Image (cartoon, rainbow, N blue to C red; front, top):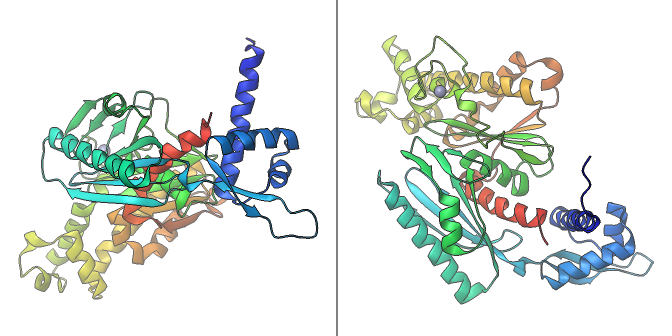
Length: 406
Ligand SMILES: [Zn+2]
């Protein structure tokens, strides 16, 4: 057993304790020094010294006296909104969204620009101009200390280097986004897979707030990703590529997936699969109002028109969405057996489309997963919706600061 030098050990303990206090104030604010000592089991002197340091760094602030309960009231402490700012950026296939938030993740500025291009250079150019705009706005108006930039992309991101290894839907590979922007902006940059970021967003700000073991499903029109939080921490795998749940083989005799395999989860559950499911009903001669919605042109049938028809109680469209809900349930059942989560959050446009059939999703999970694992699993829709990813990238930055505050 190697022994760390003693001062190093003390530094580590102090860092962990500081992080502990910040996290308590993040989730259960306000607290007095005495409350913090009671909750953490740390000595009063230790707590006071850590609190002084955090006050000095402006990360927390005093919020007045506690309501008197008979004894001597303590001073209430909470995270200081002006403790710094974070920039979050989502690079999607057809738009870029940037937000600037304060230290308690209140959005102070945001902007979205549609990008219609196959050129990675065009995305980088727009992203950099938006980051500059956010930094300029902060320097001019908010004047908060920039703590870092979080980036969410659809693709495989290497954990240590923050290099985007592969983004099939953007046609990118081996893009060193993290090191590139870190040297450009001189502040920490964190690059995350979109579903992973969204999972952290829901854990910090959304539906997963009070849960430690959750899985966020990002079911988009093209593919399915999973962000996994275990024991309150992101689970990324050895290199950062964990969560590619969309490529879990669910029907080996099924259609071919973009990855080359047959019957991946995202090959049987995506917008094109739902549309062809509906077309199969029509080919069997079933009546449907869908033809009226697309002016008789089968090529114009899209996920939106299927949803529209289903909302108008069209049996064929509803059958297609019920089928999709079952596929959703089958995949989730596998994840329940493997991870035994408390909560599964469904996000992405596909989840919104099958939202009216959530009970069918649950039923097929219940039927397929092993009884002890599935007991008590909650399945909910994302509460952050389209902001899940970008708020997740903010969470990535704040999480790092809360973990390594000194
Ligand atoms: Zn696949």
